[in-house]
Length: 170
Image 1 (cartoon, rainbow, N blue to C red):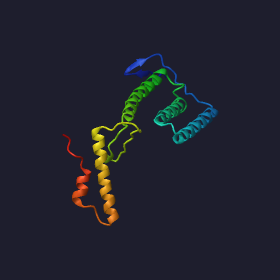
Image 2: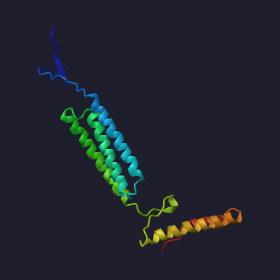
Image 3: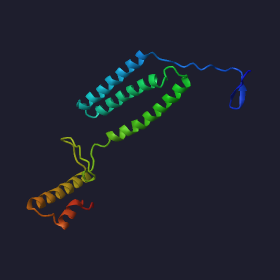
Image 4: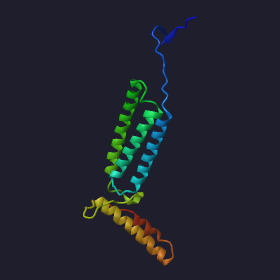
């Protein structure tokens, strides 16, 4: 009895045999040890004072770990090149999205304190008018709250509310 193989509803003559790839157990042990080492490196980098470069180093280590997992645990190293192409295309596009996010993170050096974030102004940097206004209003509000707390009473409604508002810009 012969069986016909169909592809997209059409019979095909040339059937390609599928061969599974079985990796030696030692390969998986080496990959696991490599992943442990890279995880330790990620942990060590978190304590290193690399400044803004720490994010880039952490992303590079994460990329190396993802590469190991994809190559050996997902068997892309031994798979059809088309699947590798699809995977790498996806990685490239996700990398582009991360790149734009990193550009945005690097542009956020001075943030508004009223929104719960802090200014990161280096000594010698000049503050813009809006940053100075926001900072002064925030400090006035904190001073009014501290004074009221020291006196043992709640801050006056009018003063605390007015201190939190930024003066009108002309």
